[in-house]
Length: 319
Image 1: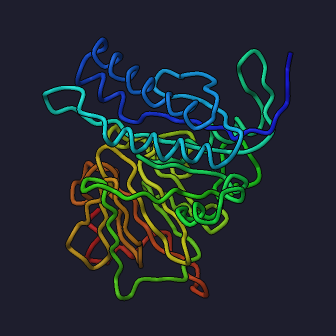
Image 2: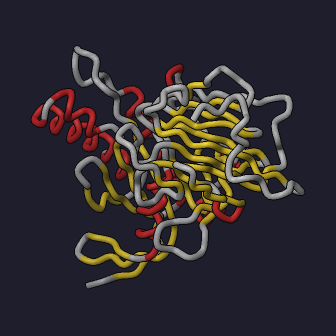
């Protein structure tokens, strides 16, 4: 018999499991992934939730209250950070993506269906390594001291939905290999309206109503870049407080060169503030002609419409 209840839908997914299979082999990697998911899943009943199902390298759960779901997210992320390496030899570490939404769900035969389930599943596409994302309804029902730990990402366009959704990112303390890089030029623009991205000579304009924008090979990406070194969800550009922030979500890294600079900034699960014009190398330096490289140009308030990409005479352009 089907029942309809208001629930907080929770999806968690491991990133990097494919590389684990390549390094350890199918049997060993399967054992490692299964153990990790089983250990993470025990946090669901401990935090007052119900485990709906495991999904290979992920899980789905529902919780009666927002605080229960967020507590489970924090504990799972902490558990994974403390997880020992699965082998004596160097192996890629897996990262956890989490998404939580709120709404009525239909419970049938131990499974759950409904709009809140769809929203959580699609919100997961926008989460990066070790990131936990929640929707506006979840955020509004949290105690104020918990809400202070979240950062507003403005509105996100979810696959298959017409109206954009407000999304919040859980801010967590990061270790040395996930430390966020904040790089701002003295002339950085803090009243950005959007960004113009050019890939293979084709310009794409992303204004506030299309932010944040995902870069990568996946179907959920607003800026699709087909290249072997580009991850399914490679990077994300957020508009926060009038400034554009680029965040690397990839395996191979994102590399930034600003117009007029010879130095190339390497982002590996880090972030930087974009300003002016420049190039983004997805999976390698823009100095390497074989790397998928996008040109970017910020769109600022009261600026005239920018050209599709900087003038060919610009010294930093080499293609």
